[in-house]
Image (cartoon, rainbow, N blue to C red):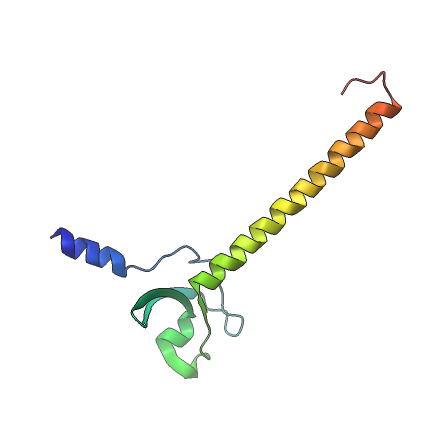
Length: 106
């Protein structure tokens, strides 16, 4: 039984981005799908309208989870760098203001 359960778990797609992605063409949400390519398991998100109703509803739009992960990581890194830069500026301003008014406690 555990072999079946493990096999079933391996076939469940990741819902990491479920509810966050929307088709720009038709407004439908993107849904996760498992694709097997050259023996490798890949999760991609596809337009739900296209997936359920075909070309009559929307054209084929999809994005691989690896691409989403890379974009999310790059965005998080950019936010971190911006925060670090802002904190450096704040610390510099605090230091300058304490030098100009030595009687004021930090």
